[in-house]
Structure formats: structure tokens, C-alpha cells
Length: 556
Image (tube, rainbow, N blue to C red; front, side, top):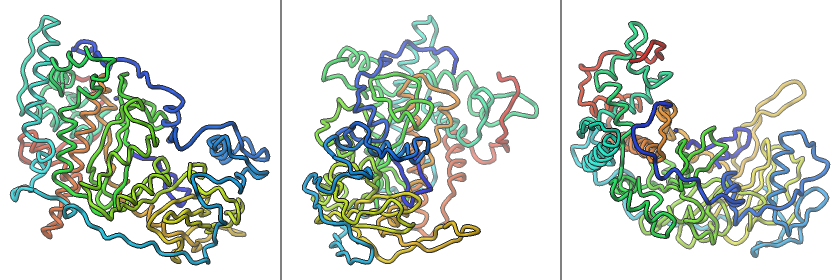
């Protein structure tokens, strides 16, 4: 899932054919039973524990038709019911929550105390590790994370499932081998690079508008049959798991569990994160309805399944991740945002002194204090109505403050900052000083035209944007194949996303290892091209030049 960004603010807000299916009805096609007000808040990027809904408390003088007004209304609707608002819509200065000090906000020219810096002590040396000395080609990096053993396991399960489905139709399934699956994966990657208007167009026989490469790898019919029969788990174990549906023993992720755990462990085995890390959300789109929670309704016209991933800010490597199954699968004692971070940030495997950058959904004083107990720093934008945010209005940032104006307040080891850019920005941090004299260029409207001026910017905003930009650049998970093929089974969509994670991580490791050896790394495009040829067991001389233009000819 590529996170959303708002370029107007100083801080970026990151808050699956119509062809008949050959297999039997997927027994996972059961509507989710975990929908509730809490789930609706989660879909909007809010936490049901930390952001409690309440009646509208927005100022009556606001223009009801403006976009800014709509955003302001949402802010006040999400305020705690016990909060009294003053005439300007701000909470009363007498309100005190979670022990947060009610002292006044400070100006940028008032000195702040530099927090003590923790020693960065990772459990292992950051970067690629435990790599074989001969590991140099794209396929070798890919197979570190997606091993031959895993490929053979998927081949066995696919053959078993395909034979079962074809037997019901009175037909015979033609078994595939490991090379067939590798060629299939090669074509999936290829389709993400060379985009046609439909799946069949890749096998078009048009004289002028056709691609020659796919037909060299496998036929259209074989590609379709593998697509439909692709299976990651043992069919007999799936049947036993279905019998347990509705009980505590039922495994919602049973159909992806073998690959799920292998990929997670491999990602952590062959790489250790650098100091700056983040938690990002990604969506796997699908048309299926299952017991696994579908979410992020505003991210895409298609609903999808959310993954939480711990990503390295330096290079974008996905170190660990998990699939969100629904609120019933978590204790919810501290809120989903809190528990998602704690599930991924394991100080015993990471070490201490890490700096975690998170978006508004995760940021909370409770989380940041508990991370400090693990000797892990944290910072990120925060909702002004989130539990624990200072409620005092004394010397608070005025609504009509000029660009660059800031206020800050420190509550023990927590720093809260309000800064005015095109809009107000609220930040929380455990390792930044309020203001270090940094500035940023902004266009300001003058008498005749806009001019570039230097405006003050808090260190926490500057640092956050710098680290999150690196993550955005590496978030190249496209989902193009899923948009064309629209798999009807949720576990197919998750498989393609795991494939995307594997390919991106393999590319990053290749890049870092080349730099470590003072060699020029392959570009992402060159890496994918070589990987496709190696998976298809073809050399560069076997591949004829291809065109990326979509075909409009009649397909096979």
C-alpha cells in the first residue's frame, strides 16, 4: 500500500476476470463479522481506544462549505465527550488528561533541553548478512527469500489442488514442475513492467501490436490454468481447518500460513535494519469476501487486506510484517495502533537505540513512553485530540499565526510541537529538541506575486520528512497484475504481494552488496529484466526486443 501524502503541509500524512473459475467455491468466502464503529474508525485511520468519537463541537462561525471546514469538523467530532470547548472551538485549559502538564506552551525563542541520546546498539551489524559468497545475480538474491524448497512446496500444493478441481469436472490435471512455476513468476513480473490493456493481449498474434516474449515462456492457456489452481497450503489441511470454523482453533490465515511464515523469517534472516525505521501500512486488493478483515476503503475503489510492515528508512527494506485479521484477533487493551507497533518492534531481535518514525495512526504518548522503556526512540505527527496530547490553551498557537510560527511543550521525556505551515502541524517526539534554528523555503504570497522565503521549521518535522521520503521512494509495489487479472481468491492476492516484497527486498540487498564491494549496482529496471530472464531460464540472446505498447488485436 502506498501511503497517502499531503504536500501542502510541512509533514507528510501517511496515515484484485470475468472468466469462469476452474476450481470449487472458496469456503473462505464468508462476510466479515467484525464490523463495528471501532472498525469504521480504523478504516478512517483512527484508533477506537485513543480517538473516541463524540458529538460535533466545531465552531459555528466556520464556513460549512470549505474543505478546511470539513477537516476542522472531523477534528472536533473526534474530541472526547468530556472535553468542554471554549468559544473558539479549543478545549478548555482546565482540562487535564493522563497526567499531562497544564503548563503553558513555549515560543521558539525559549530554550529547550536536548534529550539524552541513547547508544545505538543493534543486535547485529545493520545491512545484508549471512549471504553466500557466490550470491551476486538477481535470481540468487531472490532465492534467498523465496527458496527452491518453498517453490517446490507451492508446486506440490498447486498440483494437488488442480487435480482435485479438475476431477470434479471430469478432466485430467496436467502437473506442473518447479520450472513452470518459475516461468509463471517471471511472466507476472514481466506484466508489471510492460503494461497491456488486458491479460490476453500479452499473447496477441497481431502483426504490428504484439509482444513476442510471453509466448516463448508458456501458452496463454497454461498461464491461466496455473493462475486458477495456484495454492499455497495442503488441501486436506484446509478442509480440516474449515471444520474448525467458528472456534478458537480456526486459523484465518491457514491458506497462506506456509509461505507467510517462511517469507517473514527469510526477510529477517538476511538483513538487519539500520538505525531509522518506520511502520507502514500496505493494502492487498481483492474482490473476495473472507473472515480476514478487509479495510482501507478510501485508499482504492477495491477493498483490500491491510498489512503492517516494519520498514528500514535508509533503504526501504521490509524487515517484518503481519496481515491484519480483525479486531477480534487482538486484545485491544491499548488500541490497535499501539499493539501493531509492539508486535513488530522487538527489541530482543533489533537491539536498542533505534529511531522509529510513525504516522498519526500510531503516535501516542503511551506508545512513545513504553518504547523508551525498550530503549527505542520515536517521533511522528499526532492528532491534537488524541489521548495524552496537552490540553492547555495558554500561549497556544493562534489560528491566524503566520507561516513558520511554532509552539512547544515538554512533558518529562515527551516533546509536543505545534507548527504553522500551510496548515497546523502537531508533532510528538522523544529524541528531538524543540527548535535548533533550522529553516525551510516556502512560497509566500506578496503584494504582486509569490516569493520564496526562509521560514523556521522544528527539527522533528524536518527529520520526519527526510526519513519518510526514503520509504516512499522504495514503495514500488504496483499490483498491476492484480488489476488486470483480478484474482477471486484472497490468498492469491496475498501471494502476489509477498512476491512483490521478496523482489523489492532482493533488489535492495543487491544494491547494498554492490556498494559494499565498490561496484555499480543494477538499476531497478535492469534488475527486474535480468531476474525475469533467469527465472525463465533464458539468456539475453534468447530474448527478442519487445515493445511496451498495449495491443488492440484479437487475443488467442
